[in-house]
Every structure is written in structure tokens, then in C-alpha cells.
Image 1 (cartoon, rainbow, N blue to C red):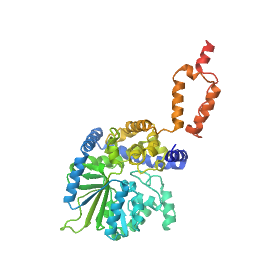
Image 2: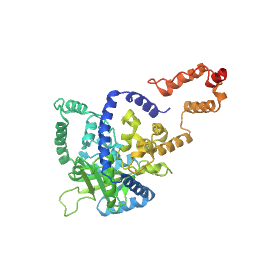
Image 3: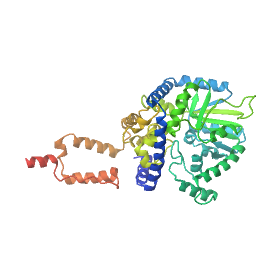
Image 4: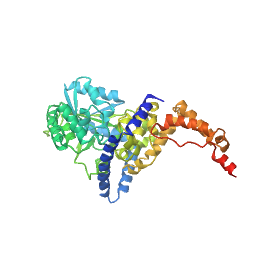
Length: 457
């Protein structure tokens, strides 16, 4: 068993029985569920919308090369510089060069899982540049020295009391401050950062091929200020984010908000199509768009799992997943957690090290039911498992136990080869190694059912 797998099992064992954590997640996801239920009811036929979105994203995957080139050409015509990054190291090198060229001391950054994927903050801080998260949830976890807990809700694991305590400790705000007070406190802090930053960084919810533009959706307005206040705007986005036309936003934006937050539309939906023009007063003077691969083409080459690149990062599968709700976001030890993370992470990282994530699933099917682009996540997890076995990655003990179990269960005579006492000894090993200390399997009778039946007859 590898290091990542051992850590996953250990963390899962700890967090699954942490009742305080369970109560926080249960409360926060229950509010999400209620909001999303209302959001879905606004649709006359939400299944038809999901079907259309799924077909649109599958068309993108079938023609990804062409759409990306179309996006690049149109973005360049708009005055943006497009940079292709093979991996996170190359992406950070691009960023570092841009920051140095523009004598950057301060970066303001809106919420972006892609920047988390490449360890953006760590990379720029290594050259002495301060990076400030401007999304409230991201700001909270940055102050706490943590990573985002959830794709959409970075601080889902914290209660309002936890945040009040954190801010009192770090900023000497009044004890037991209200969420409203703390929100205003952060707003005042960030206003100065927006004005002082030389560079602003955003991700992109969608890359619009026919316009060479990016679309960003948010609720706080921090992305707008991150993109418009500084003189330089850097966009970092995965290559799978491309969509054919700006007209498609009428389909995708409401679906994303309905499944992500339950809203009919998020508060701010912006399209950025390059640096400011000569006739414009506001906006960045330079715009750089870094298109990130970082394992996506390896995933794209998979016959079945490539379908996961249709994901629009709404977070619905996480909120519906019983595993995620029990073991939490940090247990996965990856940028993307929950069902979608379990599918894509082994391909984005080392498959052998992260293969265990594909087995962290009960195959209940809830994630597929709620997905707005109809990704068959349980099936893709099974394909990951199949690949893991075919590559010979299961540990020796697992192979041995599987072969032994297959032999024993292949016939009644094999089951009756050993007594109940020996079977109970094996059961204890299974409890210790697999089931864990929190549960016990029932004892096996000294005589099998078939022997008892023959004796009774």
C-alpha cells in the first residue's frame, strides 16, 4: 500500500467519526440542498437542459483541437497573449516571468481551482510577491493556512464561530463577531489591495471560442475588481473549459448557478475579451491567458474517462456524495475532491499513487443523477479501477486475499474445507486490516450451514 493510500485511510478513519465535523458539513450541505431544489424548480424541463449541455460538451471534446485553435486566434486578435502550459511548472514559470517584467509586488486573485492546482500562491511567494485571495471563502482558508475544502465553497468545513475565532486570533477583531461584521472587515482590507496590486489573476469558467474571450461567474464582485483594477490581467484556465460560442452561455450560466448555489443566475457574470482598447478608460493594459494541460491530454486519450473533461465544476457531485460528506474534502489530498476528483486526479497526478481514490465510492449513483452535464461518474470510476488492476497496481495482500476468496467461494466444498474457528481467525485479520476498529463482523458458526443442514436431515 502506497503512502497516499495509507494517509487516505488514516484520515478517513479520523474524520468520519468526528461528530463536530459531521454536524458542520451536514448543516452547510443541507442549506445547499434546499437552495438547489428551488433552483431546479425554476426550470420547466431541467432534464432537457442537462441533455443539451451534455451534448454541447461532448461536441467540444470531439472537436477540442479545433475549438482551442479558434479560441487562440480570436484571443490574439483581441490583443491578448495566449500561452500554452504543459504542466504546473511551465505555468508557474510563465507567471513568474510576467510578474518580473511588470515589477510586481502584490497580486490580487479571484477564486480559481486551476490556480490551486498549480500551487500559484506558493510559486509567486517564492520570488517575494504577495498573493492575496479576494473571494471571501478563499480569503478565510488562506488566513487559516489551509487549502480550499470544496470546489465551490472553500470554507464549508468552518462554522461562523470558527471564523470569528480565526479572525480574532489573526486580526484582533472583537470576539464572537458576526458574519456581517467580518464580511465588512474583509471588504475594507481588500479595497486597499485592489488599488495597490500591479497584477490581477482570475480563472475562467468558460473559454469562448468564437470571441476569444473568457467568461467568469461570481457572487462577490471580487473577480471584476481583480481583473479591472490592476494594469495586468492573468487568466489561468484548463484547456477543457472551451465552449463554441458566447450564445452557449445562455445554457451554461443558469445550469452552473442552479447546481452550484441554487441561484437563477449568479450576481456577476462577466465576459473579458482582451486588454482595454484605446477608447476605453478602465481595464488592464495587458492580458495574458495561460491554457493549462497538466495531465488533461493524458485523460483525453482515455477512451472512457475522457468524458470527465465535460465537467463545469459546479460541485453538485460533491454535495450529493455520501463518501465526501463523511470523510470531508481534505482527506482526498488533491485539488479536486469528491466523485469528479476521484475520476480525474489519478490522471492529473501519478495514477499509481492516487488509484485508491477510484475505490473510495459506494457506487450509489447519486453523483450521476445530479450532474448538469450527465457525466457517468460511477462508470468512469469503475474504468479507473479496471485500469488499476490491469496495470498490476493492487498490493500483494489484496491480490492474495482476492485469489483466496475466489477459491473459497467458488464451491460449497471449498467453503467447508476449514472449521469455523479458522474462519473466525481470518475474520479478525479482515477486521483489523480492512473493516477498522469502529465496526465488528458477526462471528462465524463452528459448523457451516451445509454441515448443519446435513446433520439435521
